[in-house]
Amino acid sequence: MTQIKYSKSPLLNISSVTLFFDDEVSKISELDKQQISFFKKEIDNDRDLITLQELGVYHYYLPIKKQAPNPEFLEKLRNIGAKLCGLMNAAKSTEICVNNDTGEKQFPLAVAEGISLANYQFLRYFKDKKKSCSNQAHQSC
Image (cartoon, rainbow, N blue to C red; front, side, top):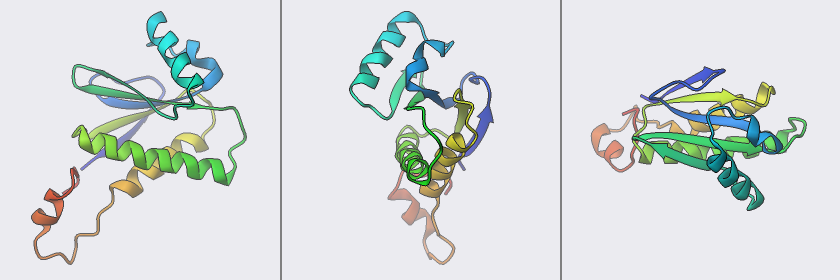
């Protein structure tokens, strides 16, 4: 079963997603100068999700433009969370830590909702649950 954790700082040996304002990339403490330069180029190319991988642990970074949490933007964050769930399942991640560097409480909640909704499977009435789960890289089976 995939677990979602919330933290104010990155946890070691756990995959994470960090939400940050796109104009504050230099404030992310765990990035070095080369990574910050890479992030700035990715943000200029309008990437909505940046992935770094080290020793089998994936770190996903979500650059967000400063704006009020309107329903359309929160739905976009849920869709990014669903995309993130697919990446996590492909990497066989069982835990993810959500880090919020924006200060906005609704943004990480929307991402977590997208992850959990995309991870859901209704298997109660399937006769062969193992066969259904083997078709997808899904951790909650």
